[in-house]
Image (cartoon, rainbow, N blue to C red; front, side, top):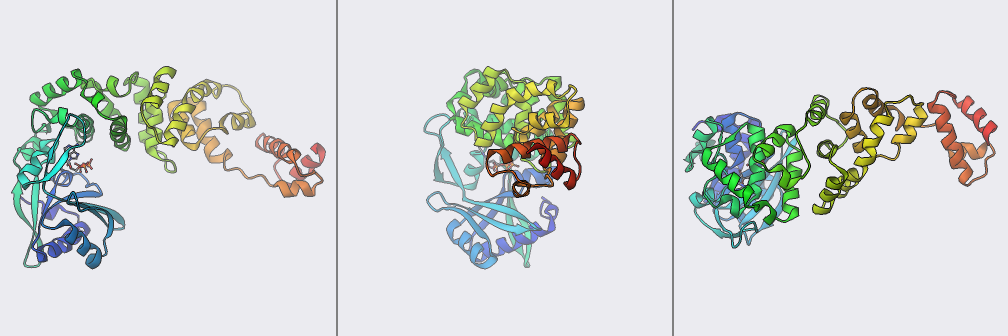
Amino acid sequence: MKLIPLLPSPLSTLLERITLLATNQGTALWLVGGVIRDLLLGVPLGRDLDLVVEGDVAALSAALVAELGANLRAAHPEFGTASVAFVCDGAEVVFDLARARREVYPQPAVLPVVEPATLEEDLGRRDFSVNAMALELRIVDGHLRAGRWHDPFAGQADLSQRCLRLLHQQSLRDDPTRLLRGVRLAARLNLHPDPATQIQIRHAISQGYLSLLTPERILGELCLALEEPQPLRMLAHADAWELTPQIVPGLHATPHLAARLARYAAHPPRRVPVGQVVAGLFVYDLAAADLHALSQRYPLPSPFARLFSEIPRLRDLGPQLQTDLRPSQIDLFLRPYSDVAIHVLHYAETGIAAQRAIHYLEQMRPLRLPLDGRDIQRLGVAPGPAIGKILAGLRTAYLDGVIQTREQAEAWVINNR
Ligand code: ATP
């Protein structure tokens, strides 16, 4: 197994120091889960790596903090887990440390009871074969080397065939979030469920296992999905698995949605949270009742709740922005909306409406008038609501090109006070 040379060198150096420390404590370390999968596929690694620790997690995490300057993010000694962060190559990398454990599900879809177990059992509690491989990290002659290799479910072979395979028959009943994890993985890595997994997926959907999950857990998975690089592919998988109607009723993979997401992917926004923009594009065409039901069903974080409440009015704005308008009218239309909402409008609409949305954000919203409230008082306007009115009028005149300089602005105030 030639995985160690595939690690990017700053990460490999960091892992070498971590492994040396663990070895000195008599603790064995295993790299597991997504990092192994991504190394085998040759795709960029995430910033969150999982390590199974055969030894004392609390002692190891304490040493990582004291001796290697890690930042302790979380520690749950009762579960044998800890999370530590390092800065590596200018960015943060988080290591999730955990004792090998088995999980027992007292009821379907609730969080499991966790017990210490062997590494084999730990791999057996995982979701898909491609996520159930482990590589021991060793120090040989002072250098990081690969130790033992565990691939009990033939994950490597599945990866080479782009196959998504659940590990056992009860998997989706135990934890239906695996349906959503599966959609994410399938879309991101171009994987396809094997025939047995397809049957399990169909069964889970027909039995409505997803409805056993709390809305918070579904929402957590949906938020992760919004950060994925191929949102439309995810919808295609969710549709193929007949999952979409159970999660977001009324959502359909239409050519309109595809075109919007393509426009977004070609020029993603830089200054606003992309997950919110993608969410807005997904729900842009939902009927008002479906949109309302979505907000009722999920405990949406407030920026999402605000955006979803803005969508119906935003949709009406689209056609209005196609008509003949003065700049000040565009300003009046768009001013009440958040930057995220206006980005959504920009990607959702085409032609002049799309251009006006982005022009508003870049040129009109940041506009500073040459005079402020104090200047206007100095020009003889009494403090109070009149100042606000004058400022609004000034902004209109300025946007429409009636005034361009400070002198013209002062003359305008004197004429209109
Ligand atoms: P990503 O690149 O999306 O972060 P990942 O596989 O590292 O992928 P994590 O959510 O960090 O995803 O999970 C780490 C590992 O924990 C997974 O690879 C998998 O082995 C296991 N895992 C996570 N969630 C579940 C789950 N719901 N059921 C079973 N195993 C899980």
